[in-house]
Each structure stands twice: as C-alpha cells, then as structure tokens.
Image (cartoon, rainbow, N blue to C red):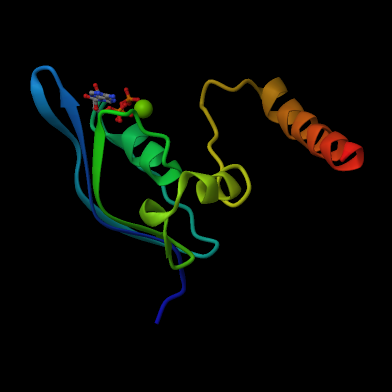
Length: 122
Ligand SMILES: Nc1ncnc2c1ncn2[C@@H]1O[C@H](COP(=O)(O)OP(=O)(O)OP(=O)(O)O)[C@@H](O)[C@H]1O
Ligand SMILES: [Mg+2]
C-alpha cells in the first residue's frame, strides 16, 4: 500500500450567498504521497484557492464543507480550531504567490527570531 501524506476524499465546498448556494469545490479526491508534489491548474474561479484554503481550514464563515482531508491519517476537518493552530505554519504552510523574493527569504528568519524571543522570554 502506498504511504500518503495527504488524502482528500470527496471534498465539496459550498458558499451560502444572498443569491443561493454556490458550489466552489465539487467532489474533489486526490492522494499525495510523501516527497511527492502536486500542481493544481484551472481557469480563474474554478476553486483552486478554495481547495487550498480548505486544507488549511482558512475558510469564510459562509462556507460549508463535506468530505475528508486526511493529513498523516488525521482528518483535518474534524480537528478543533485550537488543534489546527498546531498544524498550520508548523506541519502545513501556506505560501502566497504575492510574496516577493525578499519576503520569502526574510519571513522565515523573522518567524524564527519571534519564536526564539518567545521561548527565551517565557
Ligand atoms: N466566501 C465566499 N463566498 C462566496 N463565493 C466565494 C467565496 N470565496 C470564494 N468564492 C467563489 O468561489 C469560486 C472559486 O474561487 P477561488 O478563489 O477558489 O478560485 P481560483 O481557482 O483560486 O481563482 P484564481 O485563479 O483567480 O485565483 C469563485 O467563483 C469565487 O467567487
Ligand atoms: Mg486563487
């Protein structure tokens, strides 16, 4: 059996709007093995960011999610917000395409420094 780091199963994301329910992600399933990379390509508005935001559990309050997102076997959709805080930025990270090369190089240094400051002060 293959060892998957991420398994997305029958994922649906719907947004409740004043005009009704809008289905942004419709029945997506995928498996990602350890050390494997995946690229998601599609026209603007097809739901790429919504899919990635759902994995991070960064979703607008009008979102409804159905399905499973298993990271190392744990369903992220069943985790509490507090538990997700230990996953985000630690085990799964979000990288925005709007970051510049400078911020890409500096941000990890700034975060390491902040973590070091917090640890040494507490
Ligand atoms: N909170 C929300 N409420 C209602 N609709 C939303 C909400 N967030 C996103 N959408 C809609 O969901 C659809 C998918 O948006 P998404 O941002 O995931 O697309 P995308 O594939 O990342 O597009 P792009 O390539 O332009 O970044 C779009 O039609 C968008 O308007
Ligand atoms: Mg996008």
